[in-house]
Length: 87
Image (cartoon, rainbow, N blue to C red; front, side):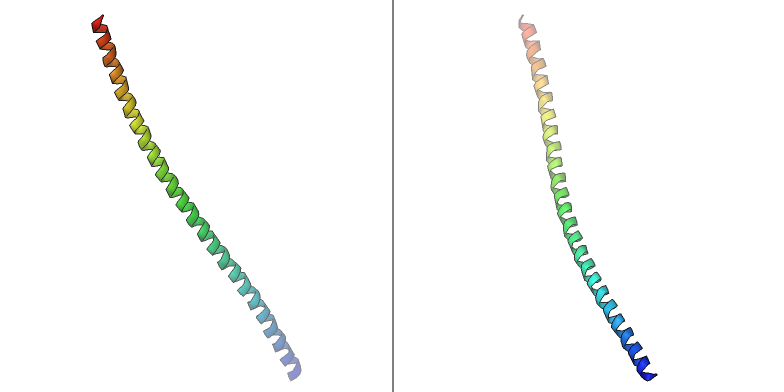
């Protein structure tokens, strides 16, 4: 009876050891995947910050262009008035 119990205990220990080994491997794979995801997230965050900076530059450029167009329009209106006064 003791031999059967010893065999059962050994079997249980072996199965537990195998299960723990599998769980350890899965945990390691999960940690590696999480690390990869964090790196990817950091890359996307950097890319998004760069894009935001470029969009802000474009907005500034467009505002400057709009201001310049307004000045040109005023200059053309003034020139048109001068031409009308000369005729």
